[in-house]
Image 1 (cartoon, one colour):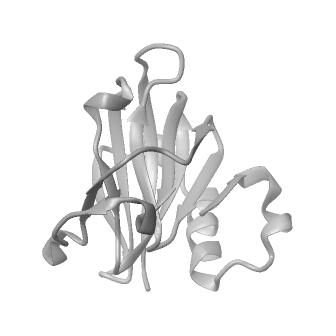
Image 2 (cartoon, helix red, strand yellow):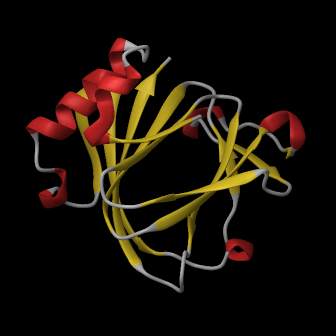
Length: 149
């Protein structure tokens, strides 16, 4: 997992070209004006999901990871805590290939708080629990780029 802010992209020169493609897309398009839902960029290889929801207590959320896609969370508005761990530390459930969804249970190893412009890149070994409230429930808007690997 990699946590950063889109204003500091020069520090992440080592990232995959596809990740920079996502950041370029975000800079060239006003994602805050996008409607909720999935927006194709390059077929199944690259798309962005725009989500809006209320953050809640961690106990009301679920753990997940993905095998076929990188998740690149980019906060557009609000603040959200994302709890993190590695899948080898979790109780992994049955993978759902048609949704690229690997559910699991366990505790957190750490957390990050995404504010406007912050991003979190989750790789296949990165378990994450999203939509966790920071200082009480809050409505957020976020872009989640899905980059096929």
